[in-house]
Image (tube, rainbow, N blue to C red; front, side, top):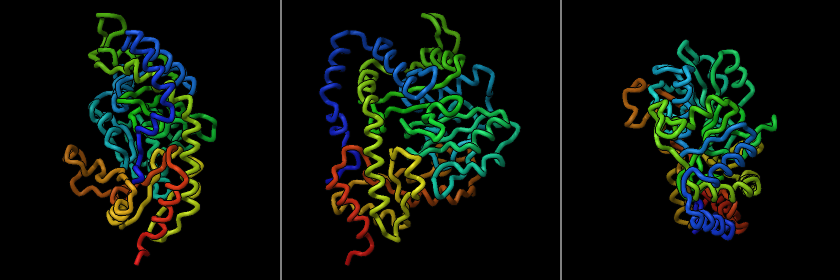
Length: 372
């Protein structure tokens, strides 16, 4: 069986260092808000290229805290609008609605699967306060046009960087340092994954960073004094220590993912499958390698029957989810988004795949629909 992602092997690749750093934390007896968290925050800020990194419990909290901080700072208020890609994972939407803000859905481009920058300006109203771009699948969502639109309209640019750790923009900025603020998830399956849940906010804005840090600590800037009605959202010392180890290998791991993806793009030739365009490869760290086909369910079963595990990212778009019934018009149609969610299948693409496993996946994809 070729698993979609075998986390045990991912961890084992740096097992000795991880075991040593975890042992130091356990033996040190300090498990929250200690040296390991402070060290990772500095290392990750330096790596991303921002002045501040504020750790938190998970990626959803990171996005939620950014928006809540902007509200506490007077930049936004309930009922204001945030433009967001329609085909994103629901966490992006939850962060917006969880703060009493309104998500405005914009269709993606069919070639990049990222928010269509040509449609953003027409979605702006007098209530728009931010654009949230999502580097979905590990592909760069930012464009110079998006930056220009945000500057001209005075909008905050927020990055959902849950899937693109270490991705470099042509301006030599990494995702997470391009906008005004960014939310990061270190869920175990991410390119930079912890051994449990963890997240972070990166920004150059000192006031925002301070507000986020207080909000994540019950709303407190100093012990037992509460400026905000905050929450408890912390990264623990064990996760921080593990992330410090894995951060050292992130660029190397991303490069291996790109090598795997390049082979898929060069060697898979099947008219039934829509593979990422060649330009896609230069702008992605391939957290997910998306294949589109109207025969998605058939392809998934075929690969499973031949020992290859796949995942669908994601079967139901946000505007069709039960929890958001009534948020948008019942007959709202987003044809590009709906097609992606209907046809997308994620095939194994990670740093621990062997060359033999890659060859097997390529062979199966080339044979799909042609087998007798």
